Image 1: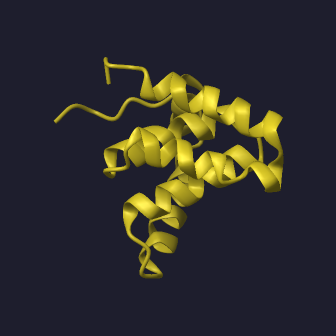
Image 2 (image 1 turned 30 degrees about the vertical axis):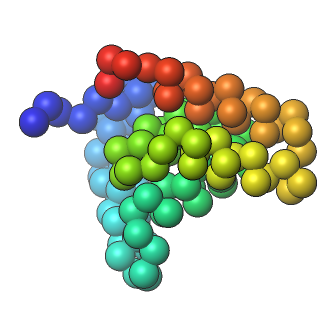
Length: 108
């Protein structure tokens, strides 16, 4: 199994602020274990939140994680499109573009 590849900035934070990043990662694990939501649904929820706050990096990350958890490209697109009446078309369009950056990759 290959080592996790982190985005450059996250890898820098992980290297320079190990205790902080470990705590953030531990929090993520704890909250996922706190309830009955499966990994795929969890990633789709986090993807929607990332789109809502217009975080390109988080949309990339949660798109990749959703795919790894078994979500299809159609499910990912639908999760984002469902946000249209909440966050507006321009934000949804941007998030779809960011998700397609990951969905279109074949090298990962």
